[in-house]
Length: 475
Image (cartoon, rainbow, N blue to C red; front, side):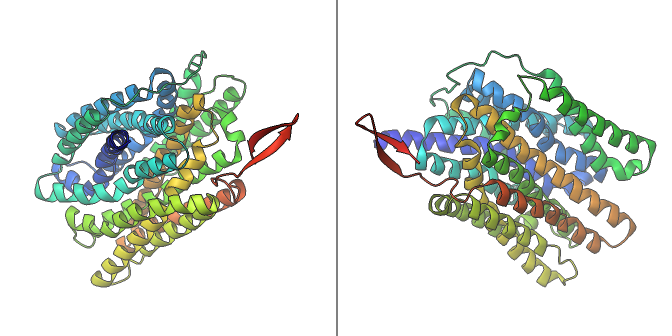
């Protein structure tokens, strides 16, 4: 029993490290924007694009990767993702201009698209009940807690060793993850789906998301009323209309809309998108304290220590809350707390010492909300999904994470950039951070309308009589 437990713990560590590779280059990149800008001479607008591209491409390819993991094997897709992570890191390490940096970020985004749904599906196949919820909590340590941890570690590496060493460390972690997962049992869908992949829907979705991302990140540079920006807006709207029109008539849809017939799954996915939008506004706070308050990347990372501790502690608390009161209450409370914490960092009118104290507390409170949200949300997203679709369902869930984070970065930094160009940096940062409220309000509404109060609770087993025989059923 002990040997079996040791093997399970080894696999969980390997999975967590695989997830952490994403955060090492995603969140760390956020913390070193000023350093890279100085080193490579790249404009802030171009760096904002490079920063959001990993999350964007992760979101674009994650549904495809989730479906492939069901067919090819979840372990195999995890390994492919880790190898792509190594390639992306190597491209960034040798980059001397924006071109290789952006290509590396795109490759890293695709690597994350492979790793995220495949590792969730591996957990679903290997664990049941409370053991599954425990394993998902540890997965969430890497997924949600990784953000704060890698901001600190990445900031220290960038300050004392150079920013490129972040990606050297990421390669080492990817290799270690592959070693730990070497003996994990492969997992595939029992019934292989024979439908061809929906490339039409896939490409329409990519085109629409890319246009929207370009509008948000480059609209200021192009001019919000310029012919190019207006053409992109029109093109994105038309492409999305075509996408939904075409997809509704297909059996093999790129985004399997039948999954959204389950209200709880819909609530988990949509609120996950919005919760990541709240979390992404940390980019403005981190950039602001470096540019306006003179912090180094390492000093900025130190501000996130409370966030790291809160996330790690509250993930297990969220798991226990899920088991005792269901998913709805912790998800609602978590969303409110996360938004409150991030909003505290908008008090840029405060003097240096007081502001830094408030930011530390704000990050800590946001970590409480993020940690509390993680396990109830992800368990709700997969518990009612059949095993043959858990890969693609996980892919859609993680697509929501990546796109929410990408658009949260894009929108908050765009607001910050526009206002900073015409007025006070302090006011611009405050408003850019408060964008998180625009994500929090609809998140609260969606959770309250779609998640049942008893969602996630263990249902009592009852014995009933059928033709004079006792059978067991769940309520």
